[in-house]
Length: 394
Ligand SMILES: Cc1ncc(COP(=O)(O)O)c(C=O)c1O
Image 1 (cartoon, rainbow, N blue to C red):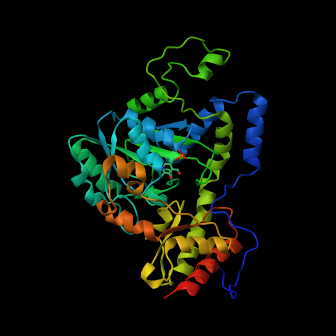
Image 2 (cartoon, rainbow, N blue to C red):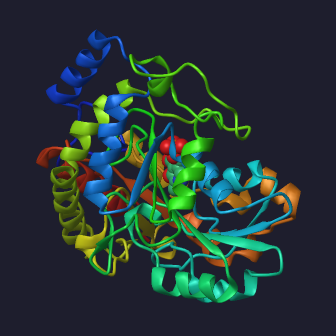
Image 3 (cartoon, rainbow, N blue to C red):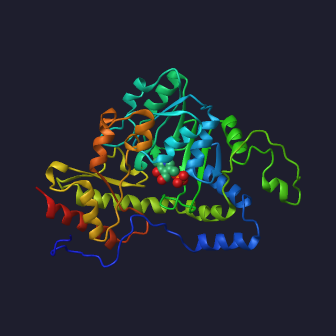
């Protein structure tokens, strides 16, 4: 419970995440509704073009989610039944589910203890004759060691599909994530740095992957709705493959267009918050602030602290409860996938198979970080962490 001397006790609960939606998004959606064109059309094309220009990539295809993006990407690079894809357990279920959906097997390689990103030094030992691709996740918005990952992949003739759900805008060696791997998958889920409510984007430099994903994202049909139902469209189409229904609507794109314009502004605010957290929480012995190689290159989608458990009398779950009692929404990213019943039962994974991810899981806690947090919100989070630490340090 909050100690009586907590400097700033909040009246109102601070949500863990909340989108910054302004008048432009509202006007864009209203205009879209009035136009009568609600599904994929001009606004989606404009959003794709804006995204392409922002990232500086050759192709961008808007889709209904990052989960859909991952499925399409893996299909396009040729992952098929019986194949294996090496990925990190420190991710959301969607990453590995996309592999499973293709009848392939996710093979987990452990993460680095500090960044929680895939440890590129452990890749070689996970690669075998069935491996088809490597799927790194830019955890929290920190770029993975892409030079090493791409080098291993090229050495074995494997594709690289990046899960960049957290990585807009993340830079790697000065370059925005989105052009390095064979295909990069972004999320516009409501908690993400740029949102369309639900949505995603795939980017690639390769024409054949772009073509395959464009075909498969809308039923495998030779002609999309825009080309069938507009004045000069032709009604006829051919089914070239049994595709998916992964297109984005113009309503969502109408939110995405102004969101993307605000991306750098949102990012600047997240960076400010991260710096303030670093400065205020860094000196506390009971918590470790995120290990970040280049703070400006980090998207700051998540701010994940790791508890120094021997210095505390409470565990992480209690720490979460104590933060909630102080009206601060927090979360845990992630319960590593190998600890979930499905992966334990199907592949026999045990905690000791991936020691870094298993150990990190006990210690991690994500603090709120989003563009519309006020200075007072940020200070309330800091005060709550300090208060919990003071009340429960050894
Ligand atoms: C690492 C990661 N990958 C993929 C996804 C799936 O994104 P979406 O909700 O857009 O399908 C998420 C969602 O939170 C995520 O955190």
